[in-house]
Length: 167
Image 1: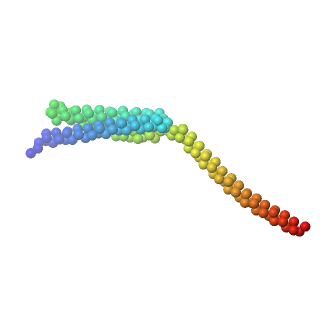
Image 2 (image 1 turned 180 degrees about the vertical axis):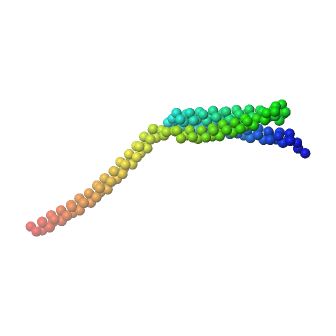
Image 3 (image 1 turned 135 degrees about the vertical axis):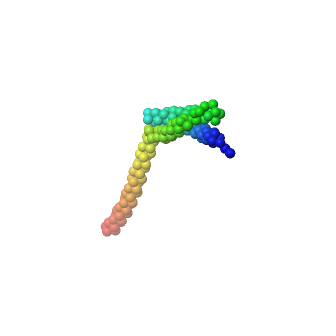
């Protein structure tokens, strides 16, 4: 039969395993945020809000990993019987800082402004479309005027023939 001590030991091991997975997720998120940061710095205009929230998010992910590591250390000492503390407080702090980091990271993207070069390109493309539409309109009007001129020319030729016959 299992003892209460064995149950506590299994629970501590489970907490440590979960914490290790959260540390891995934190380090992965830091890598992803680094990629997003480099992309935004290269393609768009990052604002102070973006920089601050990105920095805070990375700090929170790092603090989360620290608390997780501290909790794992205390849990392993508890399992070995060297320390009465279980590390539960550190695991809770890990979860709290991780949740805050998860909120800060994506919200930093809200402070990104589009690149001015891209806006200028969009404006030029819109102007080009407008000019093309105007040109097409003038072409249509020009074709209509040519048809009217041709019709009037035919009428003038017919009138000249008629007046030439009448003389």
